[in-house]
Structure formats: C-alpha cells, structure tokens
Image (cartoon, rainbow, N blue to C red):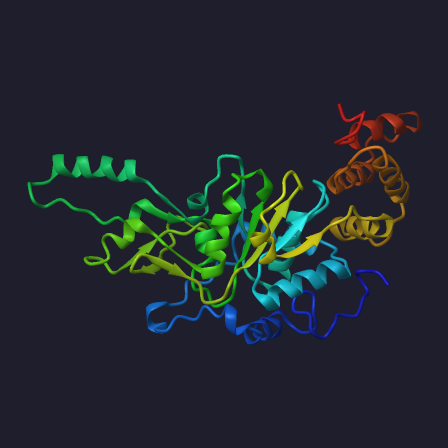
Length: 349
C-alpha cells in the first residue's frame, strides 16, 4: 500500500483523520504530565499573537509542505514525537527531504510558518534565542544625550531586542509552532547539550530584561516572524505553554551525546525508491500520471547507485522535460550528466 492511499491510523495527529482543528484539539489533550509547561499563574503568560497566515512565509510553508510525501515510518515517528512532546532528530543523506518534513507538519496541522534556524560552525545557543543590539542602543543613547537636556535621557530596551527562531517557538502560543533546527551536526560540540537544557525546561531567561525587571516588569519585543511584531515578556523570562514541534536534521557528520539522544525521537530517512519518487514528482508538479517522466525516474535510481543524488535534481529534470528542453535524441546522455550530476562518488566533480 502506498503512502498516498494508506488509511490513516486512528491515533495519528499528523496526517491523521479529521480536520486540522480536530487534530490540534486532540494534540492538546494528549499531554504527558512530565511535559506540561502550563505556568502556575496563567495571567502572567498571555498567549502570543498567532502568526499571520497571509504572508509569503506561510505561502512558502504551504507550498513546500503540501508537496511532501511521507511514508508510514515517518508518520509514526512524527506522531510519537508529538504525543511525547519531544524533539524529532531526523538523519539521512543530504537532499532526501529531511528539512521538508518540518514544512509538511506545519502545513498539515496549520501551525503557521516554519521557524527556520540554520546551524553553522559558529552558531551558539543565544543566536536561536534572541538578538540584542547593544551597539545600536549605545549609539542612540549618545544621540539622546546630545539632543536632550541633562537628566531627561533613558530610553527603553525594547527596540533593541528581538527573539530568534528558538525564542519565538518558546513563546506561549495557543498552538505549538514548528521549529526547524537545520544541520545540527555542523554546530559547535556544546550546542546539543545547551539545547537540551532549554528543551527540558521549555523556557529561558533574557538577562538584559531580567536586570531591568524591577522598573519594567513586562516589555514587548520583536519576534523572528517580524521585528515589528511585539510579544510580551515578563520578568525577563520566555516560557512556552505548548512545547513546540521541534525537527532537528543531521547529515550524520558527527555523533551526538547519549543524554541528548535519549531525549529525542529518532528517525533515519532512506533515499526514496522508485514508487515514492514517482509520487513526489506527481504531487510537487501537479501531474496526473507518470507519462512522460517515468524514464527519468528510472535513470535517477540507476545513476544514484554510483553516487548520491538529491530529489530536487529529479524534479529539475522533469520540469525541463515538460518545457521541451534537451529534446533532441542525441542530447539524452548530456542532459542526464548535466541535470543529474552526482553529489558524491568518483564522478561528482
């Protein structure tokens, strides 16, 4: 039975039976007591404003997410992570759709634009939590001293703070947001451990706000969605109500410490086979059948035996075929060499 026509399992939330609203209510009810982040005083943690669904970022999330074709193993893993409020660590070769899974979850459950946090070797935890423009604040303070009479200076810290993707995901949203931490294995060796603390507590402190809490207990600062959008932060602490849907991707460039792995649900994605590739092409390009590109799927699978290929390379090839490019009979091999260039192996360069 294919991923497309499989009957949804009753316990599934992602790709499960019912409307998105019904499945989100089910998710809210299935909260393990050891992963309940509801604060003792709800009045101190107003819901953050829901993300605007009439934005380019949401349209991009829907576009990428609706074209994804998850198989049963992926659905089982995602739903396990949803029920247990745990991060989903997705491993596999580059270009097989690890990141796109996050967009599929957000689109299927209508959770707003994906909060994307790409990791590099220089990334530290604070980059994902918030940014503080200390230089900008100092510059503005100096201008005020020149323009104002002595003793009338000051100025709020609010305009110089903005939540990052992880910080925005941990706001007290009425529905969980989807956070994509992309290529975690490229980050500093300490980053997984630092993330683990935040994921376990569901909260973090902003020291710059904690220092002024006696004078400004509640402030509104920008979010990753929009620097102008203001979310309330009380006493310098951001705390979630619903643990975000966290997707961590890794290309397997290094291992993670056991305490971190123990707190993640793990999914290893294999390169899609012929049947799934055909479904992906049809769904992403809106085709009714595989007439006209079946031979390209065959060529893709065959060429992949000697080196890695990414699924979007196949989509590029089909798109060119549909537009009549490289249509001469004697151009076929050159076409395949150009568009389906292997990413690894002896012929990758």
